[in-house]
Amino acid sequence: MLILPGSSLATVAGRARLATVISLCRSYYSQAIPLQAEALSKGAQSPLAYPTPDSRYHELVDSGLLRKDDHQDQIVNKLQGLHERIARYSPPPIPPPTSLKPKSLFSRLFATSSPPTPSRSQLKGLYLYGTVGTGKTMLMDLFYDTLPPSAAALGKRRVHFHAFMIDVHKRVHQKRVEHGWEGVEDVIAPVARDLAEEARILCFDEFQVTDIVDAMILRRLLECLLQYGVVSVMTSNRHPDELYKNGIQRASFLPAIDLIKERFDVTDLNSHIDYRKIPHALAKVYFDPIDYENKQALEEIWDTLTSHTKILRNDTINVWGHKLRIPESTSTGIARFTFDDLCGRPLGAADYIEITQKYNTLFVTDVPKLTLNSKDKARRFITLIDACYENHTRLFVLSEVPIHLIFSDDPASLKDKHITDHMRSTMDDLGLTDDVVGSSSIFSGDEEIFAFARACSRLIQMGTKEWVEAVVRG
Image 1 (cartoon, rainbow, N blue to C red):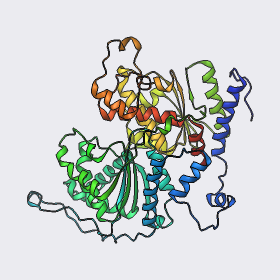
Image 2: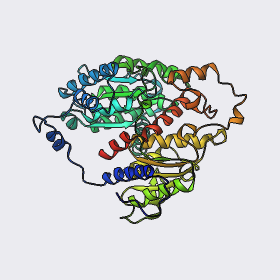
Image 3: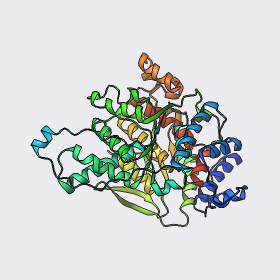
Image 4: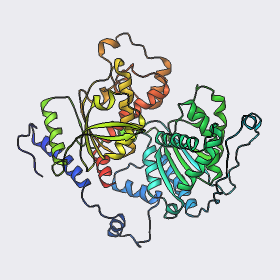
């Protein structure tokens, strides 16, 4: 492996780690070996054979990439059972679209429509919940990546729930513009029908409800999707009874909770093992502090990945009708930003999803230690991390402080800080210590603490060699 001359890395070990990262990233652009050929080379009995959740899980355990866990083994058995039922599944036909007209004021006032009834042949979905580090996303990927070939004919989709709801809102808006429907109730059924036509197998990661508009839409949306024979697997941090807790008009959302508990196998993932805290060999993707040595190391990776392509300056992409400036990028899917480029401006989840779908590798430099005075920036950074994680975007970071201190307050401001019993209870549920949380006062409330904990955990996981290699293979 070539190490560029003039490197300021002080040790041979440092050069070796950098060479490993560059090698991993380069392999992303090389021709991948087809999975079927790989399976045959390992002794697969037939090219028609395909993996299952159970076989893939035990393959990962045998290879040492996963640790054997009896509780997780039981969850995989449930995924295996659903896998086998989907292989035999014949969903009900989707009825043709009805010719709906805008409802009059009279009809909206006196309408007595009842919710649709799910088909008797409908398969029961899975709702997997657990705290940070219980392997939710890994299990979701395991299930989705091993869906039987028949799922391709049914249509399948795996999506972060936040991105899914953005898509739903776009579709609702489009229907209203096209047909002039004024009531949201008029629009949800045809939107659900379109979604069902595209995919009868839906996998939602990080199912959560924090917005009253989402809460009001979800009951009707879930009912309609079930009616059209859609089978769903969801992961969440919370038991259904805890969803949208203390939310505005939560009583209107309770029927959606009852529907989830009735039509899904609600399963607790917590086994008191945080898989992300099991030590792994770190790949060098997170650089701190911001000094000459780390700047040079990150610059070498950038130069290596972009050496055979033209650097585009101030290119733009369109997101929801506005243009987003990309300071440096390439046609091969690599982009570089400063922290302020991405988090110092009022960008939202849709912006970060669009960026991480367009670019497979992001460099983010000059990340500061985030304090109470930069709460909005911290929230945006968390959303960016989630988008990178969900879209398997490689993330190289140059930061002022180590990962676990990135959301920390200054020690002087914490002398009289009191952690409430409620916050302490939430930290205990998440398996967090004061050191991991960094004694941060940036976040308050369950949902923010969950999001913060997930971001820290994901940053650590995205820095492991196993995660980088898995992304490269993908």
